[in-house]
Length: 421
Image (tube, helix red, strand yellow):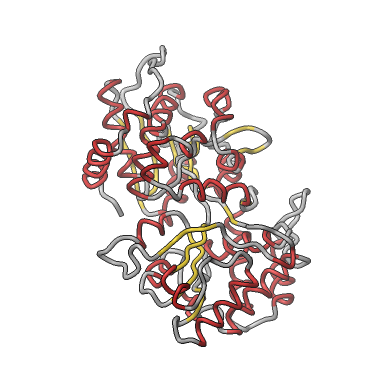
């Protein structure tokens, strides 16, 4: 985790070297309502240091102190629910994309449409679409997030390949060949521990096979069509040796550490992996890793696939200072600070024009590939009770991956249990 001091130091160094003056903020006009004595925000420890740093700058302009309460991701949901259900004064909360529907149903959030206004057209569509319920916006995205395809160019070259595979069928074949040549421990490594990260990969693969997790009526259809094919593909990856069998014990964070050892050719992971894999303190693959579109499936005639995620800032329904809360959110997510977060955490911007900004492109020539990935991405169902439903799906997908049930049996059981929620 980046501390506030480390974040401030990194942001300061980057601001001096990357020409952030080319990314001016819009002219600031303070809200006209009375100033609050302070604002309170509850966020994850992932975003705590950056929000504290940005809030310090904002306080200098407004004179309003900000109390930032942060804790691990795993405890933040409960922290927010407890605070808001108990009536604790809170103005801003972080909203993971999969929490949106539940928070709205509970009456915790207010719509942000009047605040976002016409700026919605300037945001990467998928970053805002997954934060909408009944066509209303309930969170301002902090950064874009998606699964990207990383490959070890040195290993591919040693195996006789000068370009990454474009389909998952090719990934499978090349993985087997690289293993036979003893160039890899296994071609691909996944983060398929029984966790939310497992559902993310499954959702991306279902999407790549032309399917969905739920139908247009919000009913889960994982036990038919593309849902079954995706899990069959996952099981085959392990049985065939194309994927490392340790995948079922790794989280989507731990798998990045494993890939950094240089014993695998392919990885599908979040944007943070880019920085981690190029960190010489912990990685043996610095400057060996390249990024490309996640492959599609030849069998489904799809070019690519991915799943999006990430978090946004929401304004509580109970705050008496919504306009000031929005002012802080707007300040913390403007273009200058988007680039600071991108530099330090590898989180991808939400503003469309940053992907073609000369300053950004010069510093990050791979950003155009990251932007293209959003064109082929889906998102997990925005349903109330998603956490419980996902937990059921995780359990049964993992049972199939560990050989305790066939893909069809596992998904039939998952569908049966989810129907009772």
